[in-house]
Image 1 (tube, rainbow, N blue to C red):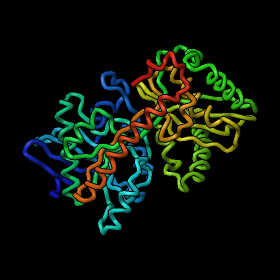
Image 2: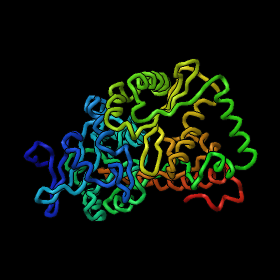
Image 3: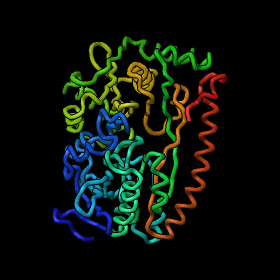
Image 4: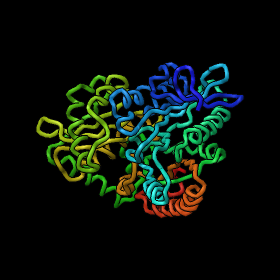
Length: 408
């Protein structure tokens, strides 16, 4: 691969060039903020805080998403021949498949048993974050179709020039999938559960959409979650003190250490996002006997609340559901947010008013044999995901007379 003047990798054709930036710091804040969806106040495109300069730079500056942890920055810059920035892709050279939530371990095992080398690979994603958002980032004044096509083709070209096995665009927006498929990527689907705010003024308005038995069960669950003298605080903005982060980090470490052995995020990361994007963060914290005992972190977009990590130092019945799911619905209704995305997996969310939603990713596989095998697998997997989504939609807690009003 040719080298640019700044030492970043570069691939080019007559119309544009793709440069590889070794870190988000290779972009200025103004450059990154010129992309659609990356800044609060972008009413035309909507704001997703998880692709903001503040969030992605905090992951790298804290040492969470860096080469040492297997997330080496390989962010793509699409530029004109004259050097004008058109778009970008948040991208990492990965030496493993941890922290991605779209699982390809079976692909890597099969390829390496056959004598191939699966790692390193390119991962176009927000590290440790199973949330849909823009991956093909386009300058707000640019032609989105043309720039996205250039980014997709450029990503494929970079994969081939680097000689890596594959490139994976995970939790992509559905509108980008056709562009990626046209460039030679394979389409993959999966399932999450989201709450949709149908213009509710109060939580009771939402409860009124549930079947009577489910409504009673929900009320009982919420009462029992707070029965042991537990109260709930919402912390955002200036309320996000270092003491609050200390408490939340203890919860995060306790749950993370038990769940997957080594939590991905360190204490510095939480301080950095507290400094850089406090107004975009909601900590839901449970208090008992004068101290916090559990909490969940959420990120606030222009239209959506994105639920992320949870933890606790005391176990109480139903407290997890209250802190992570019910309180998120309360907040979304109060703030008039349209959606709550509650993270990966979890069919238990269905009974709490979250609906099944199809998630999308796209995968470019360089080796023809592996590509054909993966394509066959994905054809069958997509059909199964579709069938499961239909089955789950039939078992939502909503009143049957409202079932035709389900969001698509």
